[in-house]
Length: 531
Image (cartoon, rainbow, N blue to C red; front, side, top):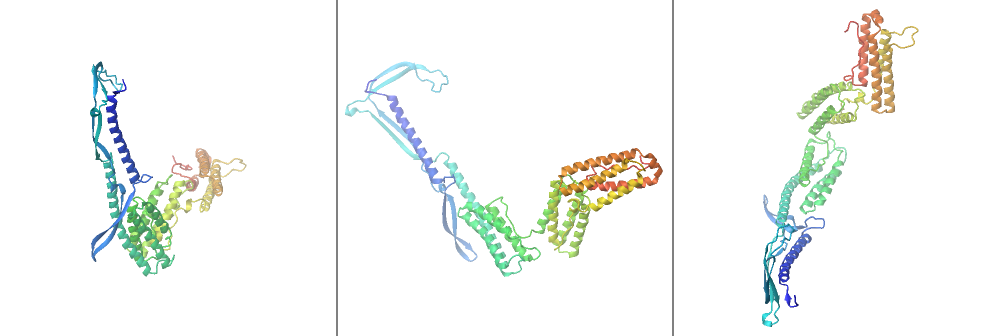
């Protein structure tokens, strides 16, 4: 190609490439503008805050109220998005020659293996004419048009929805906030007029605490109005901290009217917090209601009934406890005489005494102990609410250790020793114990080991193993008694049966203190004439 030859294909391609490159740069510039204008560095939308006045009709006539609003900035701005709608490329060129070459008219650019078409392909050769009236020209005419960014419609939908959702929440918050202000004003005014607020603090400090609670809620509403959402969790925590300081309120000295206002104040605040922070727990203050105490007791009963390893007859007795509590709550709710409520406590205490005798030392799993502690605490609270300065019987006393069991176990061991001497007295000159003496010795030894284990706080698993070993020795020895000693049995006759019954009753009660005799029964001394 000579110096005057012009590459026509490259010239046309460069023109089209310039159009595409210009479109690419315009798109990049539009995206960058949206990023810088509409979003913070952390990716959150930049807010635009403004206020306007609105006239509302009220009972006192038209009132002008200032309304504050916050919207995403991009919802107010139409980002520029210039695109090349049309490009007209015109070129005039003085052709000086034309030739035709045989060869592929086109080839596969993708490497797909499709065969190229065979045929004639024209080859053009041009040269710029140097004469002034015949110069070659290249002209690109383009038309620009404002278009939506790719995905901008979806972005607008999201922002509009955010504004719409926020407005919806705001109206809900505003509605709950008005109710809270009414409840707070009534409560604070009542406290200011009344001096009987309990024994914990004076009226001045009580009012100060209430104002701090009120301001926690109103400040959170203002923060939402101004778009300062990051402040709301901190104010919610402040509400909880202030509630924890109000443990001094006594249900027995707080007037009923004041208690009703306090509960209304807390309920109104809870509605506001639930609107601002859905799902977050809201702290309360003051003594719980009787219904709340009864629900707590019911939950504790269910937990103890389900706690391993279980105890035969316990679920039925626990239902009796729950029934007594329910009757007491109903009697108090309907303002029945005091002696009616006292009678329900008496029924509760009788059942609690029965449960105390049911425990044994091995029914002490961590789950069971935790459930028993919770039920005892719930019982104490609910009965204190029903009857002032009253504490129910503690059903846990017998199983907390060996305290209270020493005298009973020693009495039972003494009964076994008495019957052993009566049924199979040691013969003069014998150096080995008979089977009944071995059984009695096993019972005595296991009690000594249990006392030592409780003093030294031996792990429960180790104590269980020792008791199980002694129990196995006991049953084996009683089995030997039943298989032999026929001469002694015949000689005693009916006296043998009497002594066997006394022995069996004492042995069953003794071993029931230490282990679950339902799953591991105690072997009885067989009476004469029994199969």
